Image 1: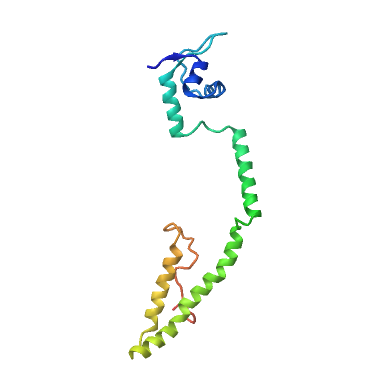
Image 2 (image 1 turned 135 degrees about the vertical axis):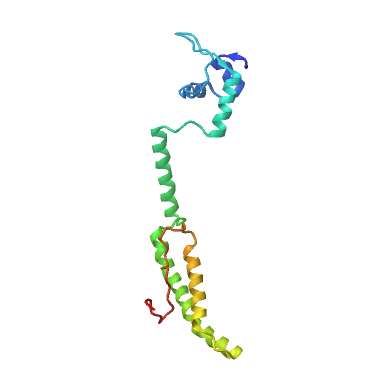
Length: 172
């Protein structure tokens, strides 16, 4: 148990304004040792108030009011609009439009380059490499890349489960 004090003394002890303590009292969890009657001030236990302030600091301040939330949302919108104006943000559709051709080009090169790679390996090592071995490896890489950032089993992978090499029939 701490010292019993009034609001003015409480403000001096904790270095917080009396007005702030008046606001804190609106939170039903704020500890009031003795509620003052009409014309009398409340009494507060300094230890209880200290613990309440620590809990508040650790677990976050009171929930924001509807008005505070609205103001925060308006502020967030303004910040986003400014970031967009400064070209610090790019709309997702624009990013997708710019990245899709790059992804398709990489996919085509990865799969289409296998014929050239086969020829080089065959020539260099005097072998007749099975092209399907290279195609299977490329498909495996594409499947792994398609899974990056996707939840497993989400079914929204940007690359289909079966990836065919150029000129290869999907139906086998």
